[in-house]
Amino acid sequence: MPDVLSAPLVVEFPFTRSLGPVQSAFLTGLRERTVLGVRTGDGKVLVPPVEYDPVTAEELRELTEVATTGTVTTWAWNPAPRRDQPLATPFAWVLVKLDGADTALLHVLDSPGPEAVNTGMRVRIRWAPQRTGAITDIACFEPYEGEATAESAPHSGEFADPVTGIVTPARLDYTYTPGRAQSAYLNALSEQRTVGERCPSCRKVYVPPRGACPTCGVATAEQVEVGPRGTVTTYCIVNIKAKNAMNDAIEVPYVYAHIALDGADLALHGRIGGIPYDQVRMGLRVEPVWTEGGRHPDHYRPTGEPDADYDAYKELL
Image (cartoon, rainbow, N blue to C red; front, side, top):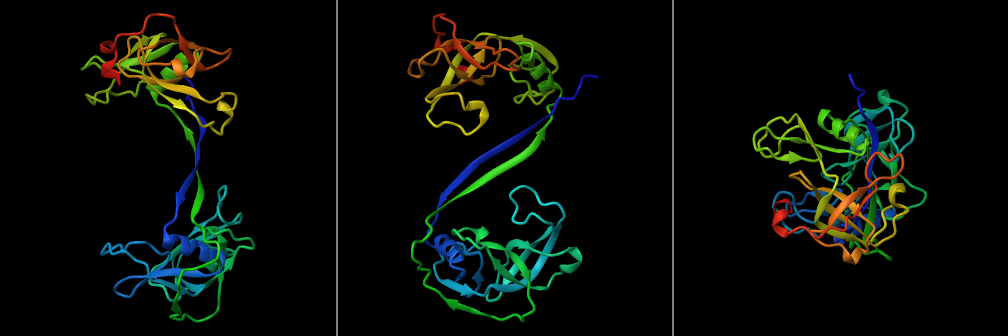
């Protein structure tokens, strides 16, 4: 039995969003150690606040300050914190209904162990020493002995230097294990060959192979070597340098294209090199360029052949 291929993969990007008046007031308030909710038409106070009533869709703008103390409504223990989670030591994920609020806020509770956590326990906010206008301005919740109150008061939502936008890093770490079809594809690439699979029903050749035909829904097994040359079907010009080691040496602008390899019925993607970016065009004939020891083509370059006729690749756009 061949070795099972696997590799650690990370998908990471910064998520940037602008804030409306409600979210701006909420996050700016956290920076100032103030927790704001929003009052609905029927008098309920939602924390964290939203801009529209989730029941009636009515626009909400009436801000209300609530207490920094509250009650745990439910919880789950996290024995092994992961990278960038709020606490580095084991903690409880908790939903906390702050005094004066009618909904619960998700955050973490600093606790010595799960035996010290229970639904109904009283907690209070522990503020971060340095606050910037983010949910992390609440460092965590901690146990609190005080009684519950119905504390809330109207608030204008006005602060000096309001927060108008946030950047949140998104990251997913996982181990990718390809199936039979993609393992064969990757192993062939390491030999500088490109292998797809043909559907037994529609006879289309898919590269990279999925192990099943996406059109007919039947399993594929017949391997077909395609290329190595192909045709640019469509492309985009990249003007922003990616923040990863693979692309550090690639200067912008550059072209990333969909390439229909000869004999394939599905276009794959690859970088185009060996030609000025503003001379890349649909129908350009290209071939792969391999680096020493590389397990996949580094880029594709022009072959010097005449451009392919549009009718030859229009179904692959």
